[in-house]
Image (tube, rainbow, N blue to C red; front, side):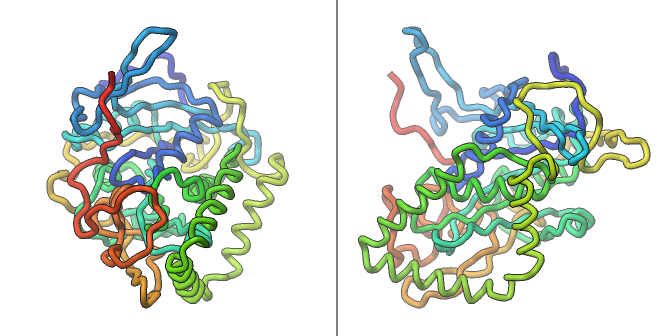
Length: 404
């Protein structure tokens, strides 16, 4: 049994997770969770043992100086808790459990079971996993974000896609499948990052994920400087694209394909969703979800998936001891399906529905080429192109040199 010290009883908690590596193109997903932790001043209460899950030759520790004393930071996964005030517009707060780390190198089933053990002890009602993939989307248009679940009932209630993906997967797919076997509602949100500018960071994609999370949970998330960072990022890419006529023409072809494909989606529902988000930000007291300064304060129950009769959170379900085998390479019902590829010359309709970021060329690691035709596609990234036919076998190595 996991024993937690210093963590009070949480109110309608939802776990929000993101992992660096294969499922984190442009570092968009991990940066989004880091933003939540920073803006709400998250309190770290647990960290998984790095020795159990990481190959330090793949994900190397880093050394740094703290007041002249050399210290080491090991790659791991940390859990923190934040409290959101007035989560339902009636003064009732709720808690978020934030999970942020590096995709593990080994023992994925044990890794997921350990996270689900924390979820069980904390009474987590739902798990939301953020991911980002490389896709055929222009940087000048809003970032497509798809919400996916393998729970048909949850898909109907929250207007999500019920994925039918089959193929190789990353830790995002494995964790979502483990949640399904354990009876814990789970959703994954996927942002599509332009494959021709894949180098991190990508604040525009992080902002899109946060906006979709805000809509899903019905809470107001403070944006801080993220909106300005997103505008600056797009301006920088605009300038780079303008310097190369081939890139400019390619971006234009993606814009035309995207606009044609999404013309029917300019519906009243989409307009209403954007207007509701505007009202939440314009008058926090008039809409759901006002963030507190951080920390944990007493508050009343209230929020998503609460038992309407008793006003109490639903009891946590037992943790499954046998999630899907990570070695099987499949995760049916966990990732969106790929719908298109880009051709630099033809400008075919782009893929706006993500696939598993670990399982297709259009969803490779942030520093790899995302599309089958990437060799013919202009690239304004700073880094060298990688093999477009096959993604890496493990999590992306963030190490750029050995520590001294």
